[in-house]
Length: 305
Image (tube, rainbow, N blue to C red):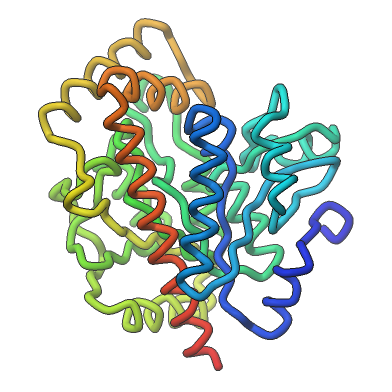
């Protein structure tokens, strides 16, 4: 991938001396959050990672290459470009070959991070098994990536629009451990609790880092999901969450949306239906995940040394 994968000088320098590095995705910039909120949030996430003692490596596709460690100008270029393609494992090669801009999903970011030698990645929530999967067959490529790319993904669980029990069951089937930090339950993005147990809960980032390191040392071949719930004071009220989610899901069904179009539509409808409360919660959990990812990367780097 040498010609198609370009790491910034800062990222290369950090990796060369085994400094902690955290990968960040760009779908939130182009499809997840409205402009300019997406760009401002991406910049804030990089700041959170730096404050935590790690080097941020935001991933995006520009000018025929996957770029790991976008600089400020490149990030703004991606945020304001027309017709940016949302890339996952199935279209990543085609987008790179086209020379056109692309933003990276969880799956595509994991691919780039692993190729560059980055072991920790922060996102909002992973994709998973969609509701009514028995009709649509819609399962996110994020689960495919987690089943075969050894990167630790810090997230607030899976996106709330998904079938969470089936998503957790699929992670177990694929051999992907779900490790909770300060929680024994798999979170639901905007909400902290689902009643679904994680594989193991940790109260210490150092202990969590040892478990992640052991998983990678055993060469099990899968990623690791770090379940990091949204902070208590940022959690969306349950009644608002349930009502707006039900309405958004019903609208998506009536419009017959499928595939890559579903998640951006539902997130935008949730933002409108909640009067912006879902957007505020989304930004809060993203920042919290970036902070924890930096702590995890620092702990893993220290233990490796």
